[in-house]
Image (cartoon, rainbow, N blue to C red; front, side, top):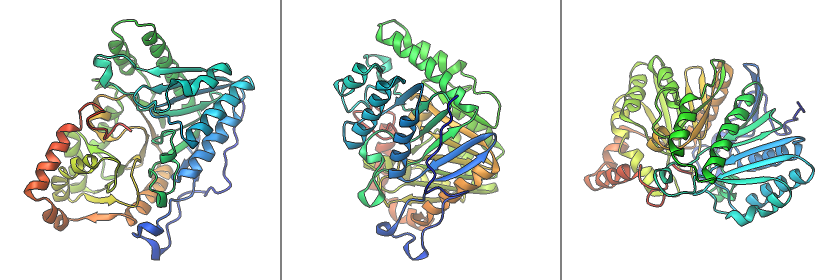
Length: 411
């Protein structure tokens, strides 16, 4: 396979450096950490917490491809960043690289015509689940770019200026990771299954939602230290959350960053148990594109706080990160800790069982918590008024609604 040289000019050896002490907690001075790289569990990882670094690395990955590019995104916009990525894909197709792009129907803000140059250059473009019916509520929420079946970039960020902007410009605070190693074969195989399903859907074949559930249910991410876990509509056993639940049962430490928070009650109980028997810290959104995302999370703070879970609201800019660290195991990918990601959306999470990776990502959570507002029991007592709780409850019940009613948890 062709080798891929990662862009590491601004990359650290182990973990993100903290912001200067005088700037901590001050939104105007907050800065994202630089990229950081680790070699662990037979894989190479480079994490990108900073928006401009993510865009630079993605373009470099596309430009480095020599044989194939397999690209799957929830949201793709026609703004400056979207045009840059599309044009890089067009250029790759023009030099003979096999380029396959799939975008979710709801997330295709650019419109199908925007991708005509890619098709004209020899690439392919397809839309995930465009038809009305039960499938209408199932969204592809994944984000991945696979180059030459040897290197993948995945995480929470979509293709839009919002996901590559700096905090001072109120961009989305997010995380992407570039990976080389055996798990890339799993990504390649998973993309092939989704591409086949989308092709059948485009041909109007019936009962495709059941077929999609079967693909998710039958997926096997292996049992190695680095695994690609997936999830989909109404699937339980084998789902990424099924594996997470097993890790949480015996865990004594939990650190998470979640843009949207409305997990099932069983998971909230597990979080609370970790808080009682060990240490649990959760960074939530203090700023979002939709206020209901914050409201539905706040409804659930009370019981967590009583269980000694430490909660922080990140209000520097809009939060979009999806990161979970359970003991020495890290989860990075597209899934939020909300009901849509647990039960409806098609999601992916990379499970990394390695203490060095877990420690490095905990330092990232440290950095974010220092720039966030602590949510204390006193804060909650002041703010959980009757009217506020009514508003929070309404937002919570809308969190499973159609995207056009409640966008929270689907970007």
